[in-house]
Amino acid sequence: MNRAPLLSACLLVTCLACTESPRAPASPSLPAPTPTDTARPTPSPPAPATQEPDAGALADAGTTATATCSARELSPVPKPTAKPLPAPAASMRERIIAAAVACDYAALQTLGDEKGKAVRFSYDPDQDMATTWRIQEEWAEAPQPVLSRLVQVLNLPFYQEGNLLYWPTAFREGATDADWRALKGLYPDDQLKAMRKDKSYLGLRVGITVDGDWQLAVAGD
Image 1 (tube, one colour):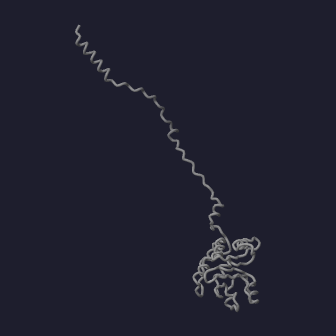
Image 2 (tube, rainbow, N blue to C red):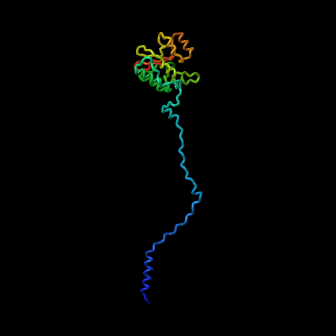
């Protein structure tokens, strides 16, 4: 028997067995996606819940956005005076008007205590000025426009006695017709007429020293 052809055939089979790569196992076939699967939208994350502002926190922050009082619609800018005020007194007048228009009772109290002397004011001596004025402004049966009168009075002519500046000039001895006419609209006409007849202005008057100490805001005898 001729062994050469047989030997060549064996060598060929052996080489093929050595070089053939093993076949990877077949992957199982996956079903095709249905139209429903492809059209389904991705759900959106829920919107964050809206939290209502805490009223107490706003009050603690000292906001005056919703504050109301009789002076709310008045201008916070003082009217020019006929003669110049000393700078400290002018500053105090300006800040009193601004605080009153802002309905800021706490700021008014602070201004009254700025120089270490509390303001002398009308009515209950056992309460501070800010509390008393707030009660008068918010009195349900008969609210009193204390803050609007405070602004109006400080926009009237003033006069000086010693180191104290007074508003209005109708409070001084020998008040003139012009002094009384300047009060128009501050109080009802019949009250002003009665005061003028008695030659005694008993309405609100304000006193500030030349060095800017707010000392009084009183009405009555």
